Length: 310
Image 1: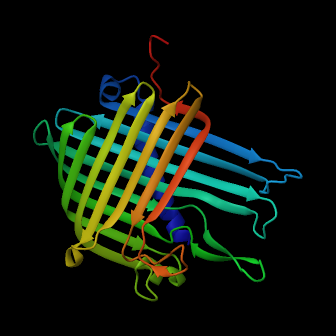
Image 2: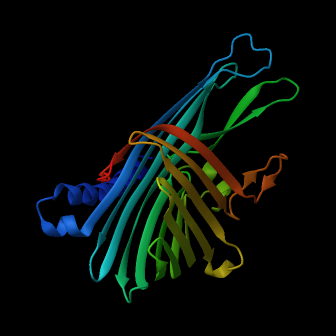
Image 3: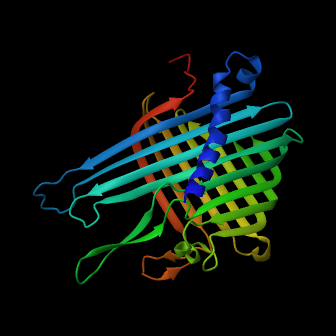
C-alpha cells in the first residue's frame, strides 16, 4: 500500500509542479504568453431534517468537495496540456446501521503533448491515471430481518488505471478534438488480490497490462453566457479483442451564477466487459455503470480573468 501511495504522490507532484511554476513566473514574457491555466475549488453541503414527519423519510446531511485544474502551453510547433480532477463526497443518514456512506470519490491526473503537423492535425502522446481515495462498499438490507450489511468492493488503488496512448489528433473547431491512437496501453492495478477477479485480473494477480487501440473525443464550449458544456468520450479495445470496447464517458454542464456561487450537473458512464457488476435484479455480470450528480455550492476559481465590463 505504501508503494501505491508514494506513486500517487509522485504523479500529483509531476502535475502540480509545472502548473504552479508556470503561474509563478510572471516576470518572463514567454511564460505569460505561452502558458494559460484555469481551475476551481468547490464545496457543497445539504441537509434534510425531519421531526414527526407523517410522510416518512430520513434526516440526512451531505457534503462534497471538488478540485479541477488545467494548464496549457502552446507554441508555434506544439501544445502541452496538464490536468487533474479530484472529487470526494459523503452522506450521513439517521436510522441506519452504517449512517456514513461515500457518495463520490474520484482521482484523475493526466496530460498530453501534441506536435502540430498542420493547423488541424497533430501527432499526440497522452497519458492519464485514474483511481479513488477511499474504500468503497455495497450496502444490502435483508428482507426478513431488515438488518443492513456492507461488503467492500474497492479501495485506494483497487482498482487504478494507467493509460498511455500515441496517435493522431484532428481539431475541426477550437472547441472540439478527436484523437485516434493505434498505439495504446492500459494498465490495471489492485492492491489486494481479493479484488483481482472483480476487475478483470487473473486470480492472485495485482497487475494487468493490455495493448490495443484508443479513441478519444473531447468537447468544451460555452453554449450560452456563463454556461459551459464539457464532454470527454473515451474508448479502448485490446488488439486480441477488438469487438469488446472499454468505454468511459464524462459529461459536465457548468453554470456560473456569480463569482462565488456555481451550479453544475455531471454524469459518468462506464462500460468495462471485464468488470463484474451487481445489477439491480441481484445478478452479477457485465453492465453499464452510470453516475450523476447535481452540485450547488461555493466555488473559488483559480487564475480567473475578470471581464472588464463587470
